[in-house]
Amino acid sequence: MVLKRVGILTGGGDCSGLNAVIRAVTRAAIIQENAEVVGIENGFDGLIFNRTMKLTTHATKDILTLGGTILGTTNKGNPFEYREYDDDGKIVIKDYSDKAIETFYKLGLDCLFVVGGEGTLEIGYKFFERGLPVIGIPKTIDNDLEKTDYTFGFQTAVQVACDALDRLHTTGRSHQRVMILEVMGRNAGWIALEAGISGGAHIILIPELPYNIEYVVEKIKLRQKGGSPFSIVMVAEGAHEAGGDLVSKSGAHSRLQGVMQLGGIGFYVAEQIKQHIDLEVRTTVLGHIQRGGSPTSFDRVLGTRLGSFAVEAAGKGDFGTMVSLDTPEIVLVPLKELAGKVRTVPLNHQLIRTAESIGINLGNEKM
Image (tube, rainbow, N blue to C red; front, side):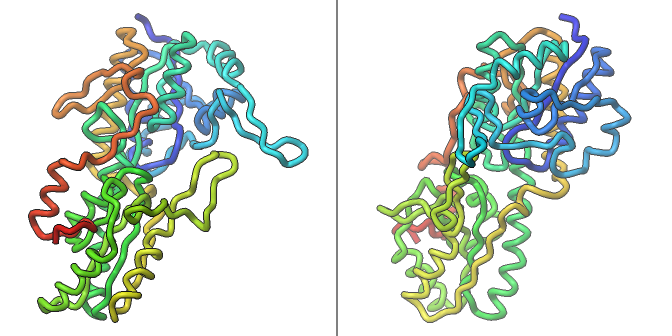
């Protein structure tokens, strides 16, 4: 088919590599298809309220190395269940999907590129079911999407966490302390596991393997007896004790997003350790530092490949799909096979076996 005008939006949490995708879609659409490119601002909010910007090769020429997204994003703008405050300050839920579809046709778009994680892609699939030509592009630092080997943004987040561990090693060794680093990932432990292994953590706690604090303390004591009176503990924000609940920020939920705000497990584990051993324990929460900054070369290349291939797929009319990394190729997979699904770390995954084989404790009996 002939592409005359295409739109692109970025939804959900930001991450490094988004601008690489925007740049690639823009350049490929203009150079290969001679199409106009419309940037839809702040995720699906822009589609609901018709907030857009024109994207050109000139406007995107310097954004490859930039973190974040020049289009803006939001993780609360689900057009099918839009949460907002009424005049009385109460949260009401409205369906703005018809309004978003109306904007799509007003803009005269031949394709909508939806860049996001499982929630954003699920919304994109719903619009495809409503008749819109949609192609998804996978994005999340959590790496928790099905049907793709990696999502862009993940490797940059891992590198940031690895760099933080490198620094915690030197100060932990100097003061003979237990140093805890809490990282993002929600219910998936990919960041903690890969960054923990690459950064030389001695203990890694992930959501998929509920931990027993006795085994954690035992590992720290063994290191003391072996002449290493300091330990590095990597904790995923969704990690939890066996039989325990997820730890949130003072029990907080985002009112407009309607989801639990995870955070604080690092401090919780620190207090547990202090009750069992006479060592200073310090906790660092990496937080949104993992989302910001310039993307690694891997994420720049992956984002560029995904964006370019998405335009190629649109030119062929392959809508209702997501571009995916099936190493070494970029391929298409149906959105219906992954929308709303979360990929966690399988308990038999080689990364887990690798960690255990080199003596990393995962909060269980294996030391």
